[in-house]
Image (cartoon, rainbow, N blue to C red; front, side, top):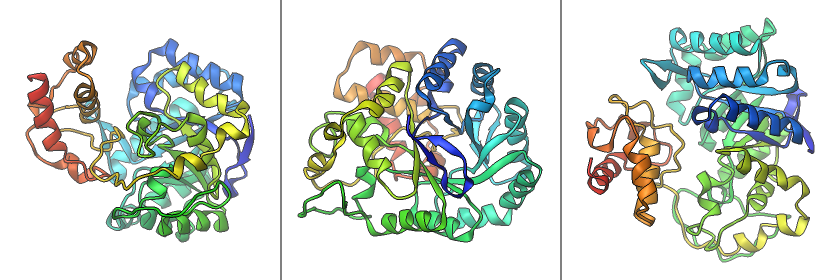
Length: 373
């Protein structure tokens, strides 16, 4: 696998890494299979935002005896409280969760300030002393670099220009990059040498390159939607096209494949031997119609936690699948959920946390009507 430098950190990383979503759903053998496959293919970067104790234990077991071969991006501000994920800015909640990471993995390569998507939240991060705490851990050799995850270019620019962060975890894919806040019709042609980016995002990538901030990419496939028949390109993009697009942005060091199993992960690793002609995304992008991703759930789980325990992202995923094709298997998967859409108390806290402005309460009502509970 090709390797790249992670910005000014000097850390060498494989250009294709692993997202953490699958670790929540796989058993110990499944996680080990993913790590084995990564090692065999020269992939060494792992993003682990989940505070779920079981997922962390399974990954620690899979890395036993080979921890030093991998670079772990662990999130600070992602806690496990009352059996649920919680994003927090309180050191009293964030520190114990991060200490758990340090106990399990010995050290964390990139300590990622978790999910900062607006100016007020960035201010809260600073006011609560989160960067200062991580700088202390860095001076003690417990972390090697400091990062931040975000979907918002303005907030990311502020963090990058602050000099605090060495790494930015950002959502990079054609759908996001080519769509400003309003709807746009593109009447120009694209080529792989010179893409027309949304100005703020283009500015962000340039600043990261200029200041030596490495970018690790989340959502390179837009939650899988770019790969499906309902792709905004009018035709499905390939895994290789999406990966190549992200890797050709300035400052990008590594894309994180949120593969659900070893087969999907192998499909991402196949990029390394894909011919240039099959990586080329220019023709596909030239067909993008008018589209706006606001209001579309990408199952990113930032809506959590739900006060009654509903797994909102999973409920919405099953609802979307059932609307397209009401297969009995989808209803079967829904039936196994501990908490159903009908339990929603419509508090709206999920909508406040959603980066994409999804009408979650409306979706829960619709899912309850469709599934009958």
